[in-house]
Image 1 (cartoon, rainbow, N blue to C red):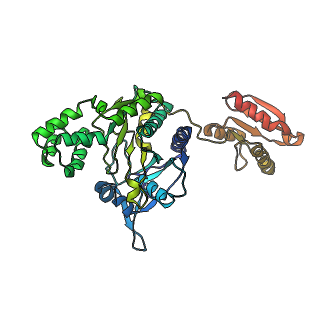
Image 2: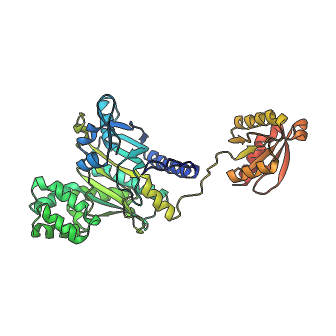
Image 3: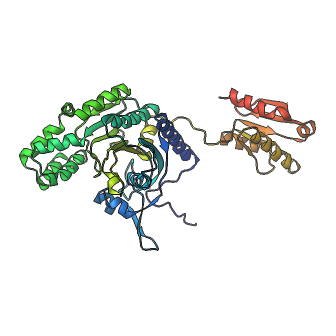
Length: 426
């Protein structure tokens, strides 16, 4: 037997049923994004490694990126995220764009990560950003967009929550614990790892990075305080705006949310499935006011989030929230009665398409039961038969595949008759 070469590890084959789900997710993301006035954009799949080396963090650049040297000797990577590309694009035309800028995108990304449930190396990701406004209300808009998406796909507040924190608040709290400025990044990383490590290992790591027992105790007290947000004027305004935006029922403060990437400067947030199905975040993001300057542009405020398709896909499938989807776009099949009537069948299919219908034509003459079975298995709702008698009389036989009934109509009535059958079968 011949060996079938498997797909590259960490990638996925999208057969038509899986592609239908991906397209449904894309259309849902589009609908939610556009409802808030965001414009779609796209960036290259390939980027210079230098773009990520500036601010994305050593782990993402050195351990997770797919990097190669091209024939010109440049170090290139398959994009592992989109925010640096967004910053580069905006910096290139900063004087021409209209601000505040609201952009969104949905496309493929690659990260060389350990394979596990809810994680693949190739994935599709929704990115959405608001640039040019530095306010808690702008941050609240992005959180509200995330909440609107969760609500749209049926993840009600009892199934999913958005956890919010502010890096400025945490920075002030780290100061109160006498954590040196050069250690704050490591301590933020410690907080980010807390739910990924056993308590004893987490405390040992805290000692390893230089926290004293007193500092560790103070940090644990901070991370257990669900009311600490009231000390932050930014978070007080954020939650007030979320009330006005109708999203407050999805959101709660959590000081354990710090986000791992280096470029976040203020509000940070992540959404989680609270049913316990998947431990990884559904989406995450925050404020990143310094990134544009790091790629050569003028300083510009920014806030955004990203959502991969793998985790949300697993959750929606397990909860039965993916709706029935039409895999076959052609609701009608024109059969081919005989070789001499093949041209007439092709003409009939063409007329139906010109009438605005999606129509497939069987590619060769075959017994009608075989063609009906094919149409039924593909999910078509009506089959059209143009036999010798129908062709001679200028008529067409329409078979409703759901009820099994058949009617004869004039050729000029075919489009409207097919539409009536399709409407009645909805």
